[in-house]
Length: 339
Length: 210
Image (cartoon, rainbow over all chains, first blue to last red; front, side):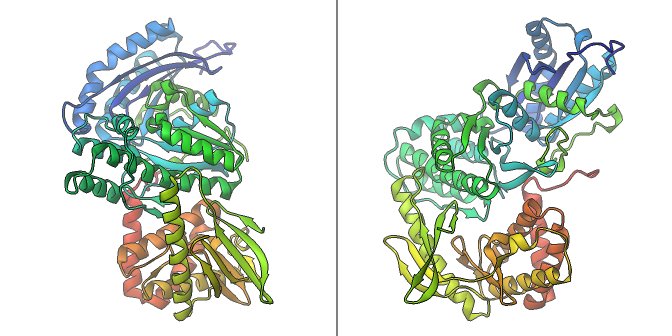
């Protein structure tokens, strides 16, 4: 298991991320030191992410990103103890391309392979870097919108989107408004100059959320009712984030957890952070935001989660390393956390 | 105060000699004041309407005594009983199965008459005097659509899975039996299939080997 070096105390994991538009290689030690975290992101010329084109991008840049990560970490392939990869959930073509790279490395250098759930990884890197121990996690990105908390061996899903994820909603609106992908950050900037609250649908269903109707309504306000772009961006954010924060607050109240962790690509949004900070104060919980460098998709979070899984013997043979585009967060057992 | 929810504070009090619950939807500082007030007023009004409409169709709910739209408060009957959330904490026995079936029947009655609860979790069901009382209709709507009814059932299933994960499947099957008895097996089947579709819409598929 330790490549014959059984007294070795620190081991090193190389993590490959490739669930959507980002191909990333992270190198992390079992002590939690991030030695490298290189990414290359596919940017579509027009429109949103085309899965096949994103996958082609990943295969084109894979060896380059891999080499620059090894160089940055100042190690060679011989120093690696584990190869971890994002096994799901995500876009099929992207997942498969990344898995091919992982299997090749594992086979070529005879290093154990670990399949990591992308959503679990977002939570684990957040716990590692913020010091949160047992948080309610709000994970918001282009591909996911999940409110979760640990209970009985798993991260249970308390609330989630029943149609499109929040990041996707912001990007879709951005595209219709003529903003380049990803639209989310541009919507945030424009929203700062918005003043008028345009009426939009507020859709919370129990603990679950729905954003598709909200986006359609926002587009209509912009194109048919000729509302100012800044005002629609502002209103879209206010409605969407109020919905997210409401569900998150209820999860905190329900579970009585004392920590709140914000992660995912949309975690960088200042307005969302501000609203969550307010709720955390109200509910007497500590609020943590995952640092910018690891909030979006990246290899370091995959590598770190790979280390956790490896410690519990969760390696997989190549023939069982099929990807799963719809792999749920709550399908994964989390042996490293106790009640 | 007896409960500080995320959305409202509940106080127990007396009102002209009756035991009442005073429900106050509190201001949320994270929301814009205009959006905040609009949501609180909408929910106060909708909850009051749905609580009394539900009663008409044989679903037990607390009686409303007073509504204040400015302060977004409702004064309603206090139900002396146990929250189903606590009752379903351990193994499922015959008594608890009966409660589950009753929940299903009441939900069926609501849906059959165009009422969607909106937040059907076990915290919002109170078992008292052999009956299940439904409370907290703040997220509810009037609707006859298949989709809305399916989402309601989907939410109940999700609530069971996140809070009562050990007995979730059994509970849901009892609930569904009660539900089907009221809405009819054909409609129930249609809704059940749609619930499955909703699960697949999000990331709801489980890995084959887990």
